[in-house]
Length: 512
Image 1 (tube, rainbow, N blue to C red):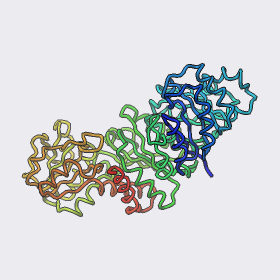
Image 2 (image 1 turned 135 degrees about the horizontal axis):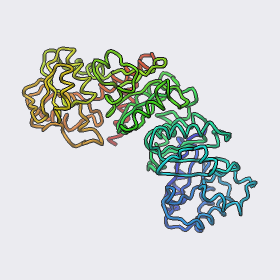
Image 3 (image 1 turned 90 degrees about the horizontal axis):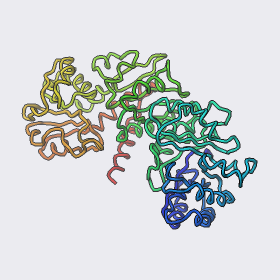
Image 4 (image 1 turned 180 degrees about the horizontal axis):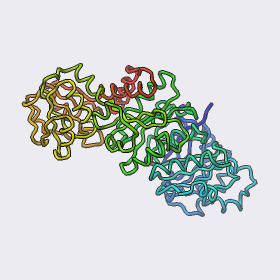
């Protein structure tokens, strides 16, 4: 059995700790007992609780007493921590997570030749930065006689991930004795690909779903969505580049499709801030310059990077050049190529549902999705008017496709047959209770198409339906453009019913 997922148990009482041990699911391999969460107990009172927990365990455990300074739940003095560990290290727990600052003081009681050190994970946590020289830092903080070295650091730039992976497989200590953890940003790559490159395990979110450090995922998602236990050095990596990315269903759809077809591929969403986009492309994506060990199969691109990414590409496909925005990255030999599947994605469900040729259609927004929609509508002969909150920023888009641009406040529904919303207004986590236009201005429309898919019923679609206007949500577009991406990357037809079912399962969880 491959052991790669460790789930923390964070319980405030002894009874809750024991109950969580009994309820441990099959989706996790190890359990981390976070004794620092037992707020009402002194470290001296924890030893009998630990022994009781060990008699109740059904899975291997790692014992942890984390001080607040390193991400723990309580203030603990060095003396309190040492007293706890002098007792705890006598037990038969499978592993112990001891912070690096306690190594020297513990040597008085447990010399380096004692067998217990093979069960000790010496850890260091830095919630502010990743060391410039990770290999030198690790050599200074992790003794060679410890069983495992764990380095958890904040990811402030893409190169931080590169350095953590270099430490994982570039030193004498085998990868199976290391745990690199990148917290935040593109640190998700360390959490999902570290074990593929031999790391001892990855940490899931806590047993109750709480996220204890940036980027943690539930054990069920690690195992079932990302299939982390099946990833290896031959896994082809794809993913999503954007900010924010938490709302995205792309990981559910693409990973379900990979699994269905038996492909050794994985799709990992990565949050990349605008100021780090160039470095991310250079160090982790571009075939001529990337410094990571895995094969890249391609990437999806979403807000706010669909136009900002253009300078970092070698060339565009004709569709992307016509649109002026990219939602898909292709690796073609040594070139990084930008493509756009939003056009076919947006138009396929629209023309299947409504007649648009010759009709007057209003488009809200001026970002990358608006470029694709206006391009597609112009190609099928619709009469398009673009409405933007800041018309001056939309002029270039209007000129590109020869369509008029108006201020958003000028929109009046009775002047149009249909309305397409390409803005994120109404999206979960982004003005989700707002409507991009005043509901009363929808009067007179025949249909409304909102590209937002989470939630499926946005305030805009709800307001339209209440007025008897036909509506179309953004999920069919998401599936259509993703299926085209899948085909371009894998050169296989996408199993669209599988992708739709995966997306709908995740959306159904939102409503539970």
